[in-house]
Image 1: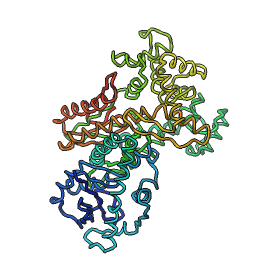
Image 2: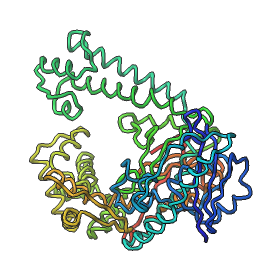
Image 3: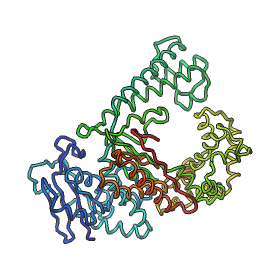
Length: 557
């Protein structure tokens, strides 16, 4: 398969050159295997080059952008991709994830070729306007250095044994293009219903606060004034942050938390979401960063569809509704991080619980509280669940207290310490794995997950940074392996479902969300479940991987 080098320029005359739905492609430049550069100006059809682009390896920088434009405007799908941008983040061990000034094309040109690139002509491309000689040179320069960058990256990838991870990322990239073009449908009528409910909650909390304070002259959004008033009432808060307020038991605290939550929901979510509905498609098309975190997880912005208020507002997800005649398929891995922990630690009790279908949280509760598993109540199980999930994040006494307090369960510092100690005693292999991996991360300043993904840490300057590395070392190999499972599944699901017209509308860590016609729902459900579990089974050798699927009119968990 002969590699091609690709780049495009878009019309930025209205300041929207980055928006695939409202801008046009001005040039498509292709560096051919012969060494010749072909520039297609103001293309109206790509029928002649479509087979070339779809059947060869296409190399470029930040190819998600180019692939979106080619797919949306000309129906060209880039199946075989190598993105120097994604490769550089993988090579950095995730250190470059989310960082500016280190992964741009000009950054790579300087790093690998020792040359400085000028971007002066980038804003000057206009659809239908003939290119100037300078613009033609600029377009060619964007391809000029890619072969050398590709060559040097390939050598580093081989040296570091990252071929598998690179393959996963490049196969997932077309799925991310599919994701961004699909978008999510928003039920504005339902959104307005929820808006009214929240406004009512805010109003009621506001009135209660004024009654308790004995005045309505206080600005409830002023932390300084609120702190003064709470202190006046004998509540010695140091701030009005949620974690500080949670320390005190007083009627005004409950109302204040309710008010602050309602205010945040209205300002951050309810008020802003409609602004992101695309006027052409009527859907929300977020911007996903394929390696948005050191773990390899995707992140999201404009808007952040991965951080929606479903915990504080359970009914919120009902605003994301399937279009008429469609269904939403929501699929997520069952307790995937704990299953990965079981595999990596080889703890016999953890592995056995998953193989026999035992309720791990009830089992943990029975060990922590020294009760028969049949005597475990809802509160016991809730405590154990918090410990099971928190332990892979390096949670200790204060963190457990805070988590349980948020769930309405009060424990003393001594009780929290005893609970965690009992956990480590109950699962010695988990304990030794987490202890050893945290030491390894701090000593080597790098780790590998079971898929071979490299995770690096900056050299620590103080004890706080060292503690942070030890804590991250416990979680990142687990979290990153989950990310790899999801990306492998995404790449395979794309090949099977995108040609059928199915939409890939969201992903949240271990969850994939798709939209299809009602007639397709059963088939899509089975394909998604099969592919997710196949991806998980590549790494969960000693216990089952389970994907749970929901079919609904709305996005459900």
